[in-house]
Amino acid sequence: MESFNYHHLRLFWAVAHEGNLTRASKKLHLAPQTVSTQIRDFEKALGENLFRRSGRRLLLTDVGHVALRYADEIFSLGQELREALRGQPSGRPLRLVVGVADVLPKLVAHRLIEPALLLEEPVRIVCREGTPEKLLADLAVHGLDVVLSDAPIPPGMNVRAYNHELGRCGVTFMAQSDLASRLRKGFPTSLEGAPVLLPSEDTVVRRELDQWFDERGVRPVIAGEFEDSALLKVFGQAGTGFFAVPTVIEDEVVRQYEVEPIGATTDVSERFYAISVERRVRHPAVMAICEAARSELFT
Image (cartoon, rainbow, N blue to C red; front, side, top):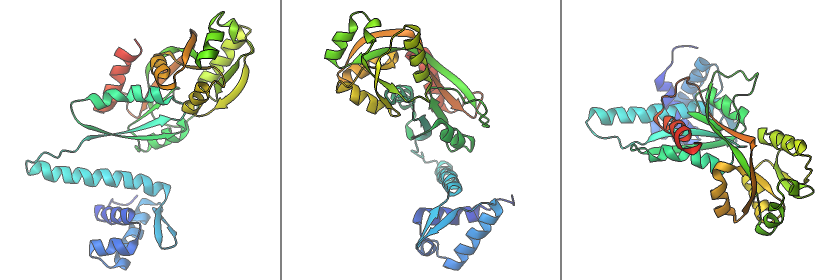
């Protein structure tokens, strides 16, 4: 890569936000041809295309999106520097970009992230949801500060990052009140032949639940399989079947979905991880997440 040119970065930043070369050129007080040429020089220096055309609009490529996140941060920090040198408080909140694995229950994600919002320093969170593989790829290029997941980094994934186990808990089986009353007596044998709502087969907890049922000789009837844990709970609330939730959020699930517990087990274990590019976490908000989970949430 050639020497980095921050003037070219500013031109890219302006065009990326405008989405149009002509409008950006007017704001920059430069000729469109000049801006276009310098952006091409910038792309050549990076060895990557930052834009693709769609009619009259310039759309960012995947690399362009990564570059824009960095440019936003760089020029925001530049403004903060100017204000600091003038002796003015920046008023800029601490930014925390969190990747939330799509298999992680939303209520768990909220409980994990909440301590970051209780810091004395204002924090602005940006939450991005996706598959663990996609989020870890974003983490590797510093597009995220931390990834929250129910599993450590998958074996064989070529990402230089570190697992920080936050804690683990058992699961509680829940159902709509009538179904819960019927299944509570004689649990877990009572689950034989009962309708069950399960997470998708590619999840850690699904494999553990299947094993738990098998070891007890209990064969519930699968009424539904879900990638989205919130949608699974909505069907459970409607009485479609019983379902399992991490015991740590049992009370919230009862309140939010108006369901009742059937029984619980610690033989099925839900684990939660913060994954970062740092072996030792330094981001204050990520530190708050890790410390609160280990000292309060899972104790």
